[in-house]
Image 1 (cartoon, one colour):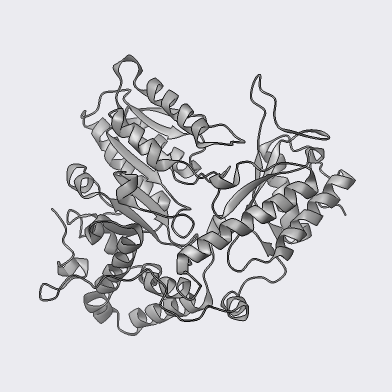
Image 2 (image 1 turned 90 degrees about the horizontal axis):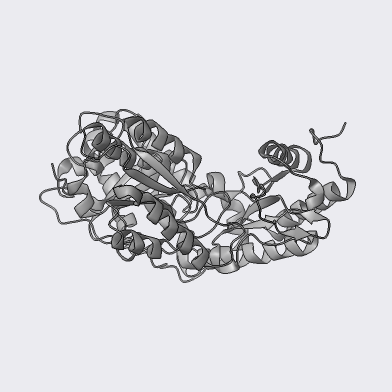
Amino acid sequence: MQENSKDARNGGDSLSTTPTQVSKKPRVSFSITEHEIHHEFSHHNPNVARINNGSFGSCPGSVLASQKNWQLQFLQQPDDFYFNTLRKGILHSRTVIKDLINADDVDEISLVDNATTAAAIVLQQIGRAFAEGNFAKNDTVLMLHCAYQAVKKSIQAYVTRAGGSVIEIQLPFPVTSNEEIISEFKRGIEKGKANGKKIRLAIIDHITSMPCVVIPVKELVKICREEGVDQVFVDAAHAIGSVEINVKEIGADFYVSNLHKWFFCPPSVAFLYCKKAASSEFDVHHPVVSHEYGNGLPIESAWIGTRDYSSQLVVPAALEFVNRFEDGIQGIMKSNHEEVVKMGKMLAESWGTNLGSSPEMCAGMIMVGLPSRLRVSSEDDASRLRSHLRECHGVEVPIHYQGLKDGKEGVKDKDGVITAYARISHQVYNKSEDYCKLRDAVNRLSENLLIRKTFCPE
């Protein structure tokens, strides 16, 4: 059944017009002050250098206040809220997103918990097609080797057990150009089509998580179309609020991005864009089946049983917050990019190391090589180093272990091969002192050769 934004179940009113377009341009005549930014994030722990916005995001106080108001509205009169408020509020949020990402129709936008839920929606319909014999055994799903682990597990749960095969495309890291990525992607396509197999789905990250790199997604989607890939799903968990999104130009069938990472919503909420043609051709449903099953994904997703929907309702409040900044979300993205590159270069210079990608291939996050003297030789070492920085130095930053590839020399500093990278983020609340705290902690560790199997000395 095809959903319609005027359907009452979809938040619409058959007597009213389509919701008014929401401007993504800032309307304020003056910008938010540093004092106001500090106040908005005063709930953050002041003793921690929080340079890991990429993992869980951040939510300002004004948006949290809006969330509390929505929660109280529900608790004060749940029945009235359910029948008269909830769906209209969700439709308003979806309309905001539609305008932000340049979608054609609000019915292409569904709100879900996170990118993992969206991956389940897309992969379940692929798995059903294998299980029902619509796809041949060993037809392929294509993904990048650095795809998010939950996506890999979803492929295992829904696709491989139903008879599908998987090809992981090995991307280079460190990386200096889009051409390196495009070249490896084309090789993966050739492998996926070998022996007459068909590629039923390509999963492409817009910004990879670890290591973080902005992927030339529009070019890769174009290659998929030229090579006859059935469906394309862009996992853009880090994208909205971090890079410009134009879903019509990108051209994927499915596109998901978390709103709680870089768009200041509380956890957790994401949008899933399903191109009109895809939603009518492919059998997509929310993985939690409720009484709206069969009424279209936006309606199914707007009610999956009694729960707290407030994070889906505060999207307009998040837009109001970003529009308090000069040039709105565009200004925030530009500033975050410039500052994270500046801080990354400062750290690399201090440590005598390198950046993991060219500045043009990063958004609000960048990878910075750690000194080889730290002797990070495994994922466990990287995890222990991260815990040590958190517990003993008050710094929160992810650490990526970069193992050496067979027959390939890694990037070297003056003492040896660099085997670990810190993924630093920059968001509006960050100060240069946060990165200096990381710099000094790593320099002390490096100088004292403290890395062992435990990090915090007695």
